[in-house]
Image 1 (cartoon, rainbow, N blue to C red):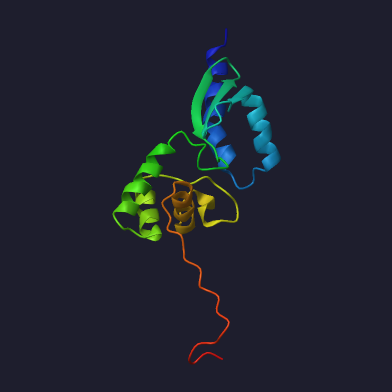
Image 2 (cartoon, rainbow, N blue to C red):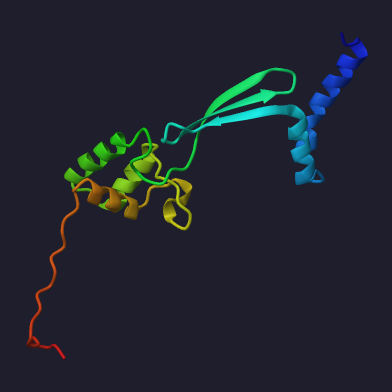
Length: 158
């Protein structure tokens, strides 16, 4: 059993950890060492295939923290919420909205795109091109007609 003095010392140290962590003088190596002292084990379960990952942290001392976090996925079909933005795109397309207006509506509704580096959607924001891609997948895009090939030049053509 700990003495009163030992308990007080532990409380003071515990209060100092956030200050130590945030200090500009604390290096990455030192932060890693703090984590190694505080965490016994981390279990990550991403077997569902969607954007949800279950993370469990077992702390030194026996307590446990469990959270569900959202990860990047590769395609629109992976997120568990995929049917909702699809339906929204259908409704807004039928209402005659442009791809950029639909993107605004989806973002305002809290939907996020799969995260891919190098694209506007990298931060999860849905852009016009993402909406156009969804429309194509859903069969909602209009086919552009190809110009006819002509052998002769028209009037005012060089």
